[in-house]
Image 1 (cartoon, rainbow, N blue to C red):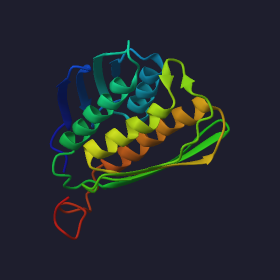
Image 2: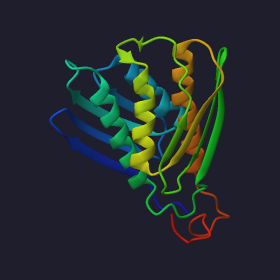
Image 3: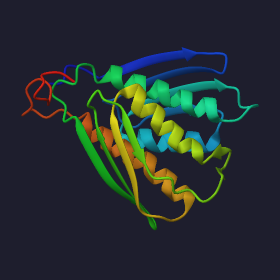
Length: 198
């Protein structure tokens, strides 16, 4: 059913950020990432590696203000790239989920590439920052991705723990769930919907 490597190249330039992102869904986990925020780079590297997505990302953001615009705008661009790369969604599983442990922390991520955006996510962080990144920006990132990709995204913390572990498990669980949702299933004819389109 697959005819080639599904990918998207998105550029976005505003007064706040200048972003170039290339995403290949059918990749191998290779990545080159530079957002200017070390912890965010680390999270996105985990996303690419554990989802087996190839990701090239360069960002110039107004970090003299803070990291908000950089993180949010990367979420918007990544969401746009996901939406473009999956094309008409014919033949893919559409739904994906993962329960992922990282030491004492346990995260559940479930998503639906439904064409209807929604985010439900626990607020669990007990520190204001991880490295150079405000922890409240984790939610901003996933909100931006879910709305730009038009996906229904749920992120639930089943077991709390170290803040770094919880954040990293979220990005990796999201990667595994998205990999599942974008995988082709030969039993599916057209799109997985009674409406005939997503």
